[in-house]
Length: 166
Length: 258
Image: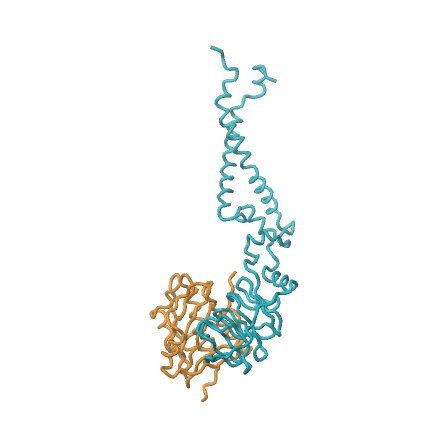
């Protein structure tokens, strides 16, 4: 049974931590990491998230970090069986950085490499909630690619609904 | 030199003995395969897909019997229970891969249910508000309690920390509190959780198919069933050979037989 549980992050098995989330946030915001905020998901948000992820989000709120028009999101999504923790920085509505922080699956770890994640740089969302740039897959890592791509789309969508104060 | 009254017997005997013993050895499996095969052929007409098996031994073979004892905590919203890595509010499944519980407390009208490396923030109806992963926590949690300020206090491998009711920020503290403790789960709720854990059980047609192939009995069992199939082939061949070699009744009569 595949438990499609969004934002799950049980650590019962060995995890490959490629970058500590705090380090990721420091890289995103420098020494002045803002305090976390939460985005409560309305029905509209949940509908859009379900369209992006192909399953309903199982949570009612998402935390994020914001400094002006720059937001950072640390999100989890199951690739095949275990959650992948991905950090996404969105700046002015476009992806500035995608990084695989913690990988727990046994295969498909190639998605952590920069050659894959750099494809997301400067990608935005169109009206169909699709990325404006094509993302090439990786043979043997289809589900991980799908998970990371879904989270990248989700982060850009969430960024578009938070209050940027302008 | 005396003539052998039945010169075929010495050559036929070993094959007959093998035929007999292999037939006996394969008989049980052949009966199982035959009976389940007939039933599988009539799954639809016998409505076997609508019949569910809830026998504990069978469910155990499908991993539908919990391996661990439940760990439960009482909260204003009901019983918070961890069972084999699944988190329940009363009998409602809240989350999978939930680790092993260390406590649950009420916070700002919600419930904070803590495992060692994550906290589940739940509504009183069992809705998952947020799952705080290890990266959102200051350390591995060993106990959780309510703080005087209406937030949460956790005892971790890196010391004690407190948070407001939103659980967004953690600050170090030396404050003590009444830590959440396990409580015996009422049997009625446990039975409901077990029901939720295993669902309806396993349909009878699925069990029959797995008995037919041997998969129900373990990873090695299909090879035993394969061996039985090979034995059946041998029985067929040896049966034909023996039949061809056996003198006809008329001939035996001519040789003085009945």
